[in-house]
Image (cartoon, rainbow, N blue to C red; front, side, top):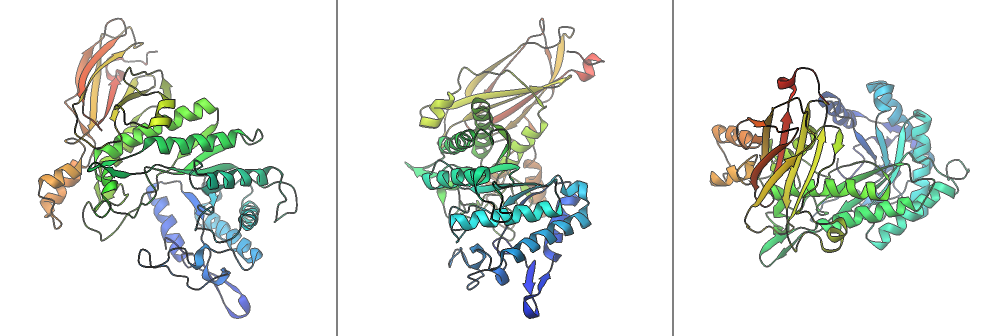
Amino acid sequence: MKWGSTNVYTEGLGGKPIYDWAIIDRIFDTYKKLGIVPYVEIGFMPEALSTHPEPYQHHWPNGPLFTGWTYPPTDYNKWSDLIYQWVRHSIDRYGRNAVAQWDWEVWNEPDIGYWHGTFEEYCKLYDYTAAAVKRALPEARVGGPATTGPAAPRAAQFLRDFLAHCVNGRNYATGKTGASLDFISFHAKGTTSVVDGHARMDIGRSLKNVADGFAIVSSFPTLRALPIVISESDPEGCAACAASLHPENEYRNTAQYASYEAELLEGTVALAARDRVNLRGSLTWAFTFPGQPYFYGYRALATHEIDKPILNAFRMFGMMESERVSAESRAQTGLDDLLKNSARTHPDVRVIATRDANNLSILVWNYDDDAVAAEPASITLRIDGLPRALNHVRVLHYRIDGDHSNSYTAWKAMGSPQDPSAEQIASLKTAGQLQLLSSPASVELHEGQANLSFTLPRQAVSLIRLDWRSLSGPAHN
């Protein structure tokens, strides 16, 4: 199912196509049930269409991964019809309006082993795929090429050449000039390692991939306004390399993953603003790994339905309002310094803030590439511009650190059980939820200004929410 065709296509007598949507429907029905708008990656090649079908099934890590599913189709028209039928089936099952909200990304990382055709053959695949999606649903959004990190020369060249093809290349499906492109996607990963006995991350590498991708898009004036999706944005490239076997990935169970994602989010948004590109969003490439040991250390947001600290970071992001407001930290590292040196010479204490008519949310984190013990940072928040008609506001302080919103710490305190009792599982699930650092408090205001102080451990993340709805009656500006 993961690296294959999910059995959507086989052939009968005379090569007649047979479509089977049973597994696909189970996947997309789950999205619908959960209220998720899917980001659809179109791939990979069915065995019956592959130019190199044997061996088809992979047995990674005990055998080759890039088998028959990575090859071009024997017949581009049959491939096109398959994609057309898939989109039409999706419309029939979920409705035109719903499917029109999906993004359709063509293939995955065609600059490396996921594609065993030439660059020209990928462009041909893209053109036929985009034409098929648009034939079924003209308003659908189609994009790509989902290359690996543009900081690598080969990936950068592939992305650049693909965009040039979309602008002025010959379309393999239509014979016209240029290709349909509604969004541009690429991937951005960091690296992890073990240094002097501790795990080390590399936020600078992640941001360098983001920056180089934005620069390539900016070099095409006619494409500069297109939405950009960083369709895999993660600390490193091997989701299935468990920390239990690869200690450089120790971050996955800890609060460091949460602080890294906050650092990556703010840096990505800052780079988009600096380069004046249209960043639509980023996706994490994380999975579920059923049947594996508790906290084995795969890149997952939960283990056995117990939420990890990283999921609470995403909860924090989701609690913030839509309007960004000015926020600065005296202890933050400059963007150019992060790109050059990552976060290793000193910890990076950063802040972002958002608001609506009755709330202000402030996200503060203390990030360091190195997973080492250190003294906490002393934080003083000065907040200006609050409604002058108020004399106090309600404050809620949420925290992710070693002791809060952290099921991993709770699991280790239990003795790291691999067969936890029902009572222990319930306790771990509670520990995995986003927690308040302290009880809600009322803070006095002086001429629209509030001051808050607290300590912030290394790799910790705080979300401070100021709420004056219940105190002020009608909305205040």
